[in-house]
Image (cartoon, rainbow, N blue to C red; front, side, top):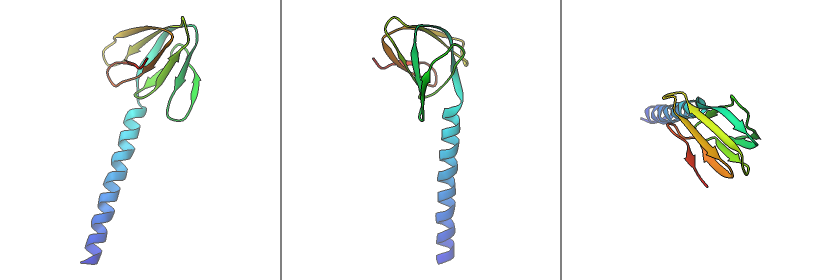
Length: 102
């Protein structure tokens, strides 16, 4: 009886670990790209913050912090829609469209 319960625990653990891995890799896939940038914006992800650049790939959860008077255009790969923003603003990249946080 005991070996079987250990196998069940291991199986559940492996399923959870694989699901977490797949979830993270799905979120790391680029969903959009910066096609125009006039001014400065910081691109933040889970681990770092860098200056955003034209042609930067954007993944779900990335945040863009636009400085005052910065103009930014983001295009989504899935539908080709363009989104235009003017700073100051903080934008979070969603799976299907960006969300303005402030």
